[in-house]
Image (tube, rainbow, N blue to C red; front, side, top):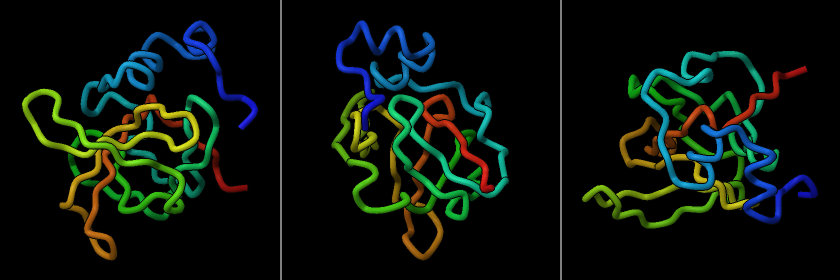
Length: 131
């Protein structure tokens, strides 16, 4: 995508301090603090770093975990999964496949049809309401 920053300086200019901390430094926002936790409108969620479409609101569900949760990405190429053994845990990190921005983690405790829970930081997402 053409609006993807290329250097660290570009990223710092584009993103807020909190967006940078989460997307570029693998940070996590406090639970229940994000603007998308309780959002239930139709639309799509895009990467706050580059604008890539990541999740459809139809796959969002309330996992009672404090972060927006989705049972699937918009398509198989939208996000990338990476092993994450930080903080003494074995988890699977989820990043934007377009810009590599940290989004959150995916767990195997979600609803059908996938059985997965993509636990995503609100600050890593922008929301585009359905027209």
